[in-house]
Image: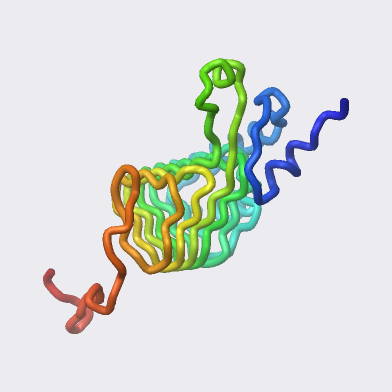
Length: 202
């Protein structure tokens, strides 16, 4: 029986389950080394950080800014398509593709996890891996310490409240929060902050 090409399977925009032993460990080692190199840079080494991210990520838009410490499984499955700001201590388990739109703000401590494990305990003990892709739309803000689970799509212009656990799709243009994350309300013109001379007390 031919061994499946797990690198290509992992890059497909669909879910899968597999024995963890057929995952190419050299790809994960490469990502760990690049993350170590990235996290060891000084704040002034902006060009070096950008160069490392271009080697690490599958698609790295020039306006991708990530603060250390940053961790990911493979990197090759992370795709940014516009301004992307990822704050401190983000973890992305990219065993499947993670698509990040433009003008996306990801707060400190966020975990984006395509990877999961079986509910069945014997399969879990045997090391079966489950994975589903994640898609984050344009103009999205993900609050601090939130978790985005595999198979989730977050619509454009949506805000995910701090500490949320997102287990199902969230539509566009809403504020959603909680565990599990639920839509609270739509975003409207009332949410705009009026700035007087560039500053206002709130």
